[in-house]
Amino acid sequence: MKSTSIRLAVTGDVDRILHIYNQGIEDRIATLEADPKDITYMTNWFQQHQDRYAVIVAENDNKVIGWASLNPYSQRCAYDGVADLSIYIDRAFRGKGIGSMLLQHLESIAKEHGFYKIVLFTFPFNQNGQGLYHKHGYRDVGVFKNQGILDGKFVDVKIMEKLLDGADLRSCR
Image (cartoon, rainbow, N blue to C red; front, side, top):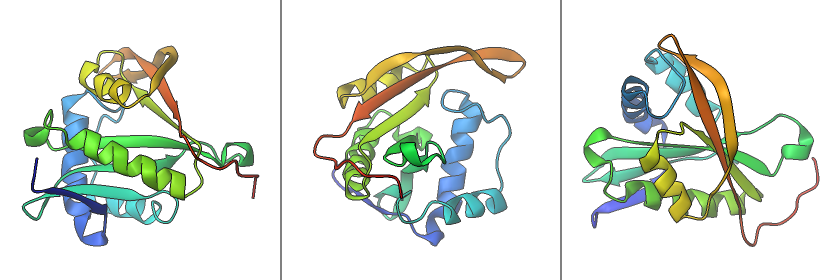
């Protein structure tokens, strides 16, 4: 999409980030979260995603149409260079290359912030999401069987990873 741009998220984007996230929850294809979130939840989440754990948005015609974030993988110092990834796209803009734009930008930010690896968790049936990640060099690691419960049923979760080229090895802080 030619008029789409990627930028760091600001506090004024939280309403749209919340709306798009709640779409992902409703659609049952991207998260084990079952209940829609409110603005208080999302504002607190956003405040915890500053500095290294960046949030970026895709904007088209001055409207946020997708977002992505780097999330802590573990609080253990040994995993300081590993980030978990989230990407959510507004329903009306899925399949239009927005995920690729966000992913490429987020990987650059990850390298700048000292991450050498990104991991993500996805549902094995989310073929569109896995297609995006495979296209950008992520590899399948494995599947956790019965990892969670959603709508009264066990759900498997696939883990994927990518080592970031050119990232520096960081010692524990």
